Image (tube, rainbow, N blue to C red; front, side, top):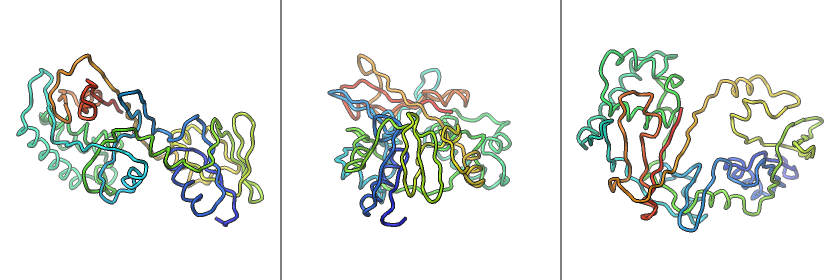
Length: 316
């Protein structure tokens, strides 16, 4: 970018806010066009007088050297560490599964994953390899629970997951913590001093003679020297925005071929607490596909003792 360039960022999610803030701090003229009335994208916090519940992001996965950790400190975020081994696990019949059985299942899953990585072909999916290597054996329900809640949850559909590259990428070290006073504080902090124009649904991005013209759903136009598009992959797949000229074939192929998972989060509240005082609770279903719906629960009493709430997930 030229220092005198006028830059428009489309989308006030975390990536858009971070890009705009960095450019703003470097002295560029930056405007963010946001379709909704809020900043943060999928970072949304439900707040009442006594309790905050994050509808979107709620974790900082590994606090050591994690840039989110520094942002959280600047945004006065408070957190609580949750211990994944501090779990009460039950069978379909309501029988409690012992700590020994759970630890045994964790070790077996490590062996299964290692074996699949070693004995799979380059284009084979994890589920295909799993069924080929373990399909004729009775698999422990604990294994099914762990496969769902520690693999499908993080990586998506096991039919689309590479059998040999399932652990590609890096993880931050340190404890995993849950934000207790609203993840939206990070989004709001990033948005400070930025020019965000709300309720602007972008319909067209046209580039001509080194000038970019952005047209919204209400017919309003914005001109810029450069544009950064940070809208979700699903919106790009639906081709809601028209690009002129069209995106190059490499970008089109990337948009078409990249996949993503859908995770729905639920907060369930009772009149009184009836569950164990552990960080997590889990249900081991007999069928693997049943494990993807409300079998893993975060004990929200650990954040607010009087909430009588559990947080759970459904995903595909």
